[in-house]
Amino acid sequence: MMGVWPLEPIAPGDQRSVGVEVEMTEEAARGSFTLKLWGQEAGSGSEHFDGVTFP
Image 1: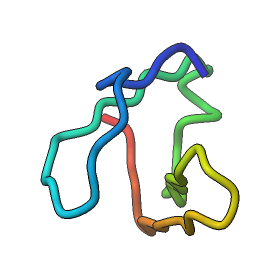
Image 2: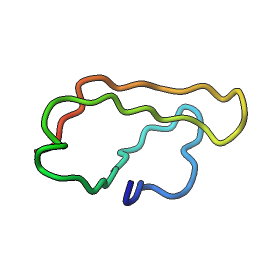
Image 3: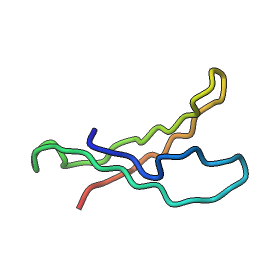
Image 4: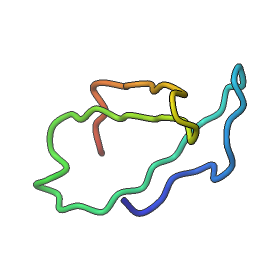
């Protein structure tokens, strides 16, 4: 993974756009992926986003 934005935590209840930059070959980027985001604290839970694609 190359980077994630924003760098600061997102407070519960806040809505923000999140950018993720990855480096991979064009062939490896084909298809759809699942993006998993989770909190820094243990037990904070996670969110899964299915069907993520790259242009």
